[in-house]
Image 1 (cartoon, rainbow, N blue to C red):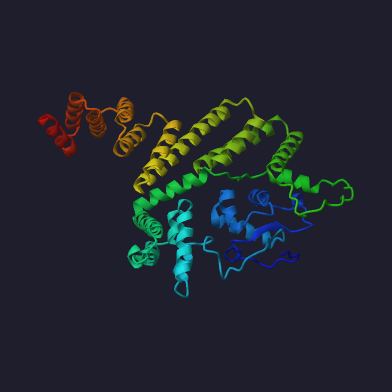
Image 2: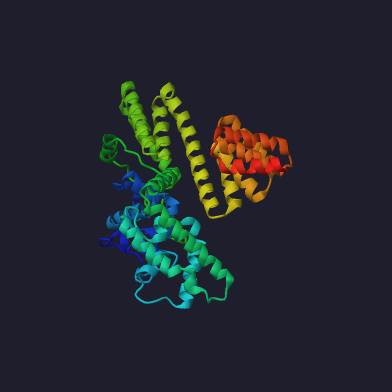
Length: 438
């Protein structure tokens, strides 16, 4: 549907299945939009639904809905084929539907819900899985957990004949319990929130403050007469010239205008301003925004050694963050007993940061226990020991690898080394005793 006189729209009223489109006759480049609203418009193609914009924009659900509501209030955006919010699809808010349902779900409805949750399990964070906000109190987390665990408890559905259904239900129930353990413990919840912020920082963002004086000069400047518009081609009328290329053109226009109206000192001041903005964004872990600010700083002052050095440091920080995210995801996969995925993620983390002894150890441990590849384990642990001396667990794992390779004497030496470093290492003492009896 299209609307030329938009009413006030709250974020929570926006249909998640609807497709946002730009209202006809809107001259986007003439609107007084900030950078984040412009970024949101650049992602509207007339086909992508609201719920898919959450991941496409990298802004998350709350911020995406807020921006869409603001654009709707300004008469810029409307909805196409919007579905009612009274009956959302299970995939739109999969975890809140059962908790707030006014009637019990039928067998088919529950089976469909289990299927939707199982398919989307990798894309839901713990807050979304329990159906609570990220700032929810511990009491609300516990209440949501009790509701969800009661609904999805496998014992309630033991009569279900389909083993595949039971397997999926057990996986969902296991994740609900893990979500509760992570969010109810204040320390673990703090660590998890930090991980979410890191993942969010690695997504594309646009957060720039433009020079308002330059923007005012652009608005006051007389506009040349425009030729009459040509007849539009057949097909969809939506055409939004606000994509990545258009944003880059606007950047260039702003830079050219600033350069033509300011001297050398003003250019250096602009460079310092963007550099300071980059430092602020790095502190907030908004690395994409920091990268844009640094590029602008170097445009004004291309030979500044401080800006060049900070650009290199930013590249290293981005790599480090990617490695941390992959390593954390590997730990989660290992906890869920998805060992093939854990091995892949640990490997990705080590490709980015091969000098991480703890990453080498975790990968070696999974390879030994679940692939029984003793030679690969030996190589990985030796590299870890080279990077970090004096860790008893490293030597114990190396001793296990030698045992698997039927090399008794090297295995004894490593178990003795583990006990030398940690005399209370019970596993090493047990294995050493068994080796000496052979």
